[in-house]
Length: 176
Ligand SMILES: CC(C)(COP(=O)(O)OP(=O)(O)OC[C@H]1O[C@@H](n2cnc3c(N)ncnc32)[C@H](O)[C@@H]1OP(=O)(O)O)[C@@H](O)C(=O)NCCC(=O)NCCS
Image 1 (cartoon, rainbow, N blue to C red):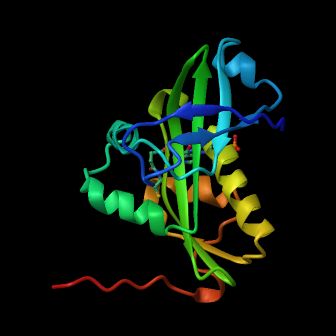
Image 2 (spheres, rainbow, N blue to C red; image 1 turned 45 degrees about the horizontal axis):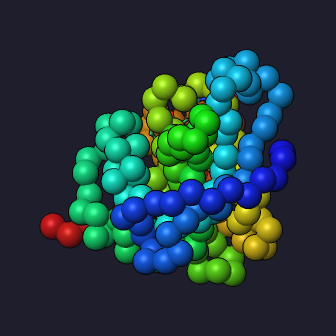
């Protein structure tokens, strides 16, 4: 993986300032064949993401809309926010997103994992999750959990996530 910092401006973002995003280049063998040589893919851990762009990504995978003020708050209070960007010339586009909440010591829970449909099936979801996991491991977080929709259990299984380890069940409480 190569490392390259770039700055792009962003308008309605999750944090008031600075209004810029630092990017880290992602390169993997065969990626340019899968995406075309014009495209470059970058990761970012910057949480100053344009919320309208994030909403558009969430729309593209069919998720229900959420109030932007709550999304902004969720990003601000997440322990880690990772995003994936396609850069073509001077244009950048948000193509992937995931975030994790944490107690900052033992546990982290992953939320909102999405890759834009036209970029799915190219290994980018796996790369984004591996990037997030490596960042969490670097912070010595050892217990990483998530809630998988039934159709993506296999996807997370391929990344090493176990369903019901030692019989442990996820339990949920909802207001009536
Ligand atoms: C789930 C999602 C993030 C996967 O991203 P992706 O870029 O398409 O996945 P990748 O191309 O990196 O796939 C990695 C591996 O997982 C497998 N995989 C991906 N999606 C899968 C699925 N839905 N079911 C089973 N396996 C899947 C791939 O075949 C690949 O396997 P391999 O490593 O053996 O080749 C993406 O499909 C997405 O955004 N879906 C809509 C939003 C969503 O459902 N998010 C999860 C909410 S819990």
